[in-house]
Image 1: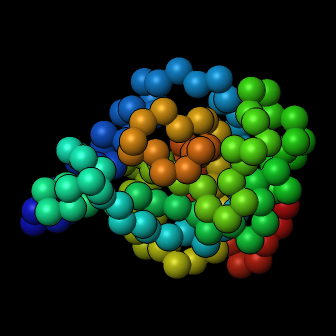
Image 2 (image 1 turned 60 degrees about the vertical axis):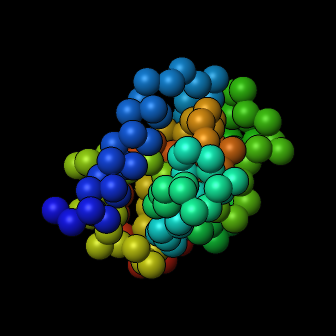
Length: 144
């Protein structure tokens, strides 16, 4: 495995472990659609304050065709979620190892993500709300 792939595996493993271990006030089953994207961000140790020494992290995102509260049934009433934290353009998704190959093949395509919505709790989380993926599938048109 080349160093870049090893780093990606490590980053995704850490993000997954953190999201699974962390308690969240907002854990709601959701189905969300968007275009699957990969973003690069400065990571540890200084998260961009020392670009020469900070690692680069890659994360999966959905570019949303409509805000989360429009896509999620009863999206305006998710317990414990402040409406100001509802992403309108992007939402980070945490993809388990079992779905990594599928996710990589679907970058740039329309997808439906089934999973659990939770609030950001660490510097690795790039949007106020994230989705812990249970299932990821390509779609031909938007439906919600």
